[in-house]
Amino acid sequence: MEQIREKAYAKLNISLDVTERRADGYHDMCMVMQTISICDELELELTDTGRVQVKSNFSFIPGDERNLAAKAALAFLEAAGKQGQGLLVTLNKSIPVGAGMAGGSADAAAVLRALNRLYGAPLSPEELETLAARVGSDVPFCVRGGTVLATGRGEKLESLPALPPCRFVVCKPDFSISTPELFRKLDQTGLRCHPDTAGIVAALQAGELEPIARRMYNVFEEVDDRRLRTVKEIKGVLLDCGALGAIMTGTGSAVFGVFRPDADCAPALAALRRDYGFCREAVGVERLL
Image (cartoon, rainbow, N blue to C red; front, side, top):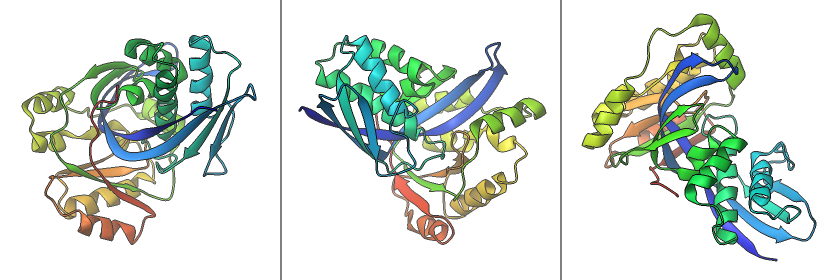
């Protein structure tokens, strides 16, 4: 049967703002997001089983519709008039789970891009992003990739000029943080500060890295949660090792620092690896679709 491979690239939040809670229970967001080179690898194979299955190198990851990759495959096959087509998705994960790096959404997006290519592009890029929004809030961004201003629940996208050349050091502590839990705490306490999103967009348009790094901000770092002390410690290490700026991505728990493109990231990686299991260097990835 026919096979196709696709990479699922992780995302980082250059900024993250929560603007208000909506009547439907979701929150309106305003985020500058960036695709990076850390990625999962997927292999898709059409089968004659009549079922969509996902196999992963992580045994705890579900293989049915609880997995966004399977949900995305079923949504695409229905949209393309291919209901009942069997599909096996083999997923080799490198993006850490529960990190705020959109690993599950990236996998779903990779499935959508791969199936659209396999079937000769029956869906336009716009249609693919619309379909992606039915799968999950971060999936449209992960389909498109690059540097993007995302609003609404995260599904309204405006592509921005590419982030100036730089390097990232990404570190995830050995715990995850519940997204619903952080939203509940945020609703209870409110927000004192908001990121200068307009300033970040202006710096992107001017191609200036340092003003972007100085303005990076994630409102979830304000939440009263003891685990965020570790986030602050990781940020401190990154800044001490020369990062221009450092923040938590998404609702955590991964933290990243932005370094100049010619910076030596080895000291930061060495310092963090003494205490944390996942520490990787990455670069930005431009638009995928």
